[in-house]
Image 1: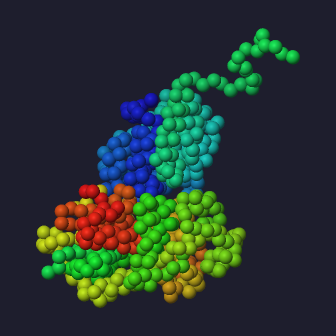
Image 2: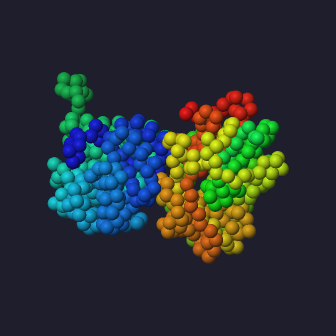
Image 3: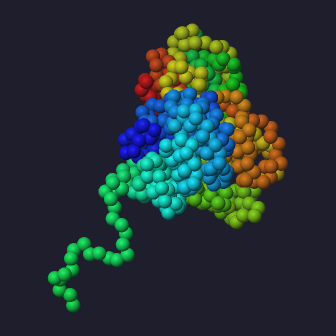
Length: 253
Length: 330
């Protein structure tokens, strides 16, 4: 596993902590999945979520606070500073939303916030589209991890632009990358890992499943399967059928 | 002097007193403020007795015990046995299929059948005819009236709420602690989950039963209180901050209500409220025994649904020594 700002993760699965039927179900999902990172949103819990935050800390995994629900760089920066105090980590998943319906990230606000937060010593995980130019700007701003979306948050559509994601992966071979948002099925996670991404982050697909723990386990297995496959140097697709046993010597009529 | 003292006269404390009284035990019932009012989260409840709908996200214990709630409440207050409806906006149909898969006790209603139940909901303007899930056996009540009726039933049995603020050490004998969040220092793992609600009044919408709007971002329920009054609820936020409803919560609740029926736009906002729901990690209410103290707590969003069952188990234990399934080893 590649390292994320100096931290090597045991599992390529990162799980969100919102929308579970109860904290007990959330904990069961984390245990079943083997997820190595928990993301947590601070914005709506401003000042009063200590009991819930203790539960997240009690999961015993790395905590990646996020700025979910922020619509401007300024809001995101304020939230990030608060998150650093609450969770005693420099990690921040930077989310600056640009469009209320698609929840598409705002590339300009994201870049602006990333520059400021990096200067303040934050280790920024920017949520972004698969845009390569934006990726370069974020790397220039000091981001050492990128988080391109699979598809809109909570949509469950999977990898919406495989070409774009592949190109992005190839363009920044040395930057750890997490496919974040839009994954609906374990096969989407396996797909992302097979493409050479370093981790996947999801929430809704597990939290809103009828059996979150079972779905979490499925995602954990799929992500690991994808890692194994990527390392095993997959064959390239061919147009022509190639028999796996030689045909010479067989009787053909 | 009474052998049993109940602290906290919210829905749990009142029910504990009533259940004990039915077993021939007359407890002392104290509350730091007195009669039920805005200081307790019972005041802000929706009053839906909807075990099957709750089952979409609740543990089996809530569904099982919740099914008795309507008949228990009917002993002391008026219960509306009119079922409940679950609807979606046109673009979120998939949410209804999912809800239907994860719940029981419902049937699908459309067209004339839905019109017969709720004429105002059947034909949303500019949309194709609506489809709903009808949970025929569910019920609802009016929480503040139910609390007053329960209080009156207790008075008939010689139990009145005494205004006093006492600690466990100030009290002799058996204690039943029903103080909700105020008991959190005794109950590790109990947390507050913030909820916010709005009351509207309009004569332009008529509903006879609770309606839940499934929405991927802003789920909502509307409970008719009669006389054109509707309760809109409720946000569910991992925060222990009290304080008034936020602008954002108000926007979300009102937008969802407006999307359900545009006439809500002209309604008067007559009240807003916010409070904390005491909850354990699994969101199942518990009886927790600590020496001579029985805690009835963690009713989460199931106060009216689960208080009777929790109270009956506590009373049964004090009477017979037998613990029910809602007892939790501390």
